[in-house]
Image (cartoon, rainbow, N blue to C red; front, side):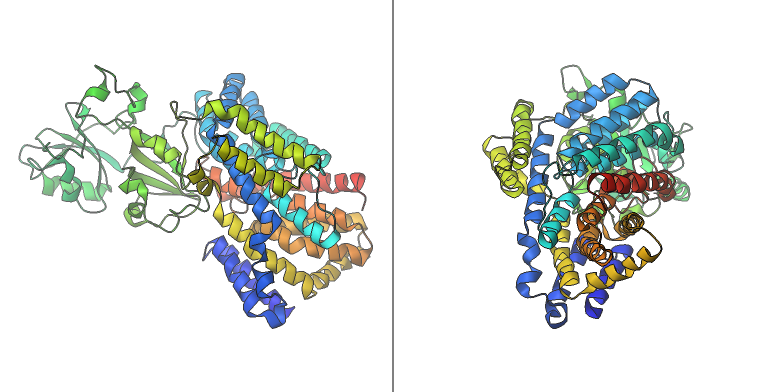
Length: 611
């Protein structure tokens, strides 16, 4: 038990400090358990069993099914109807966001749903005169409570079902807790509509453009090349190389039109205008050394965003797209999700610069806006980047699983003709599993095969659809849960928690366990807390003579209810940057919701299953 507790503390420390990615932490745990087999009782077969565990494979299949639906544009179609219904009424906007995010999350993984809806919700807010901050936290929270409607709503439910089957011989059925899930969803929705939206600050003004939102005023300057400048006569494509590394040429204009900086034949001329990103003191040095003069006007968003004048992507005759000097570009936010291969890399080391040809202007990391020395900044999960990008690359970026384009692309290509088939496949998976025709694992894998054979997904898209960090996290931590049971560690902790029964009734102990799970989830992740605490909950119930299934359900629901931090649940992290939130905003809005749902959930479990 001492060895298992030591490994657990190591895992907690690595999860909390984020010194290594969460999936690597899980692998460290798995290896440590196998190396220390005489004390942990985890053999090699037990250690790698997480990779063949039915919950792990089912979660993998559900990621692919969710990706298939997203490829058809189904969620975007819902977003369009949401905008039509909501208009500029904030209450209707909020109701639409909660419905469109929450209900589909009952049968699809909520992380891709939130990722797909961030652009639609941001556009809905700005077009309706509402701060995006008012809608993005509700988007995340609604997807979380919506995931509790069915067995396949979240990976947490699937893992808890597997552990419950192993310990109690009672897995969850498809709609095992749908009634309780509906109560939780309606409670959460009511809270967000009546109370929560009043607590969310307007971190981003509805009228703010991206330049104002990222406070770019003093870091973007428009300068003119004088006739005597040493830049005159240099090829346009080499203009960036004439400046220090911390100075970036964002745009080159001639007679009010952009000059494509990839054109080798074109040279810099006197009178050309450069829009550069640099510190004010660096600009002063450039003026004296490069023969530049500052224009008296501030850089406007219209000067950087071709979409504002309707020319983005226009290649028709007589339009700007036919001008060889012009390469339509736009301002856009990019979110780096958990599991992105960009994490730990500098922008120059990712396709963002090499293939997509973006200019990085600023980075929002947590509460901070970063403008200085961003050229060498190592990217982290949750970072939101303000970039200036060619409109021609936006479509490819939107299809890249390593980044989320926080903007609606009006002409994005979807497999719309496959929408009925994709929805039918998902409903078929749910129906076959619910009726007991097939196990959920078999039904989900059958759905994946149907997606490929039906042309909803291409074979090479399967791997990009899977969030591999989640899969490795599950596979690595499942053996730790086994070690907790085999060494008696779960029984020991359960006995300690059971001591509260001296002062509290069984219902009170159940509530205490819900709170412990919620707090643990903020550090370990939702799936990790389920793996660790379901065995402890079962042991606690045995100590006090309570219903062990009630404790399994309490852990399951509490693990999907991390509303208080942006880092404990991935959907919270996805909206962190685009909403301009501070860390404490989640506590302000989420803590009351956490308390309300803890009471509602525990009482619901007591009424429906007994304690």
